[in-house]
Image 1 (cartoon, rainbow, N blue to C red):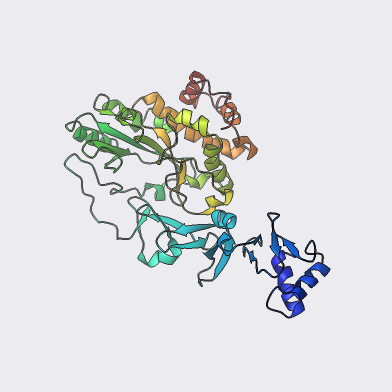
Image 2: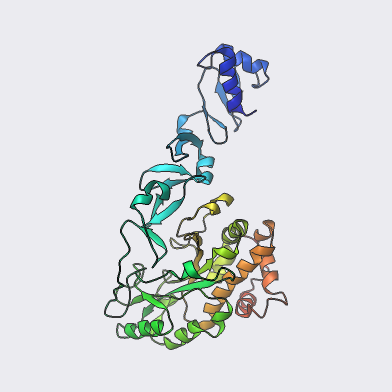
Length: 393
């Protein structure tokens, strides 16, 4: 019987409403407390006899102060419980729109204009846009408008391909941020992107006049070796810069969630946090506001969304986005980045939870005879940077 149940029984037994001496005598008789005057909480501290004390409705831990607990809405009826900080952080989320905490068991979080929002409490006011796979407060625009250079508005073009992609294969989508050397080069870059079936978009984090984000559709790993991305990068050589423009220019590689179980997804996301130093070396840049290595609970992967600026961020029910890489127009480095994500997807299917606490198991996996040739740009990079025997972060 849990502590909260013991106390409830004490109230009933003594027919009282407060923790009076009679109730504490009953607790002593049941060997629930150490002695006549004190009751211990989970942290080894003590509640004085006669004090109310505060109990977490989720885990039954006892707390000395009401401020230690947070009000959490737990169901659609609006019922509230008082949860401790650990339960709140691991089993609930904060809605910036309403200012309330919601239990993850019965509510899901979405992001609207970079704001954390409870979907169920706001679903009548939310609009899902097929073009970017995200929620908005306004309905989806009917027409896509381009500027004079051929750039679409940020996430203004159709991105519904993740909804219709083949569920039987691992697929990877890439977003590459770059900056044209001159404003006269930008229209040609946008033309080359459209010629390969890509999108060319503006992005508020890039140079306003010359920055552009190139977005490719999801494809299998083998489609990158000699496919559209290779042709596009070759076509813009000498017309644009990538990492030279600053660490804010990156490459984002998305993976389809449909081929991974929730446990495998949790291992995939956790790998980045457990091996931050290793991942930063592969990425070519350190943690930033665009790619945080934030430790989260294992169960958080059950939410449809996580923080969108995590190193590996759950963007929606269809994809996870890896945001760690610095931008590059060097083909071998571009391919290395995609191969790293693809190899990690395969690794988390066969590894244990213990195997992700350190990079050696992953390195052994990619350099094995069965995989070394498929991931050869990644393997060459690991050898060149002496990363094949790297301890955990």
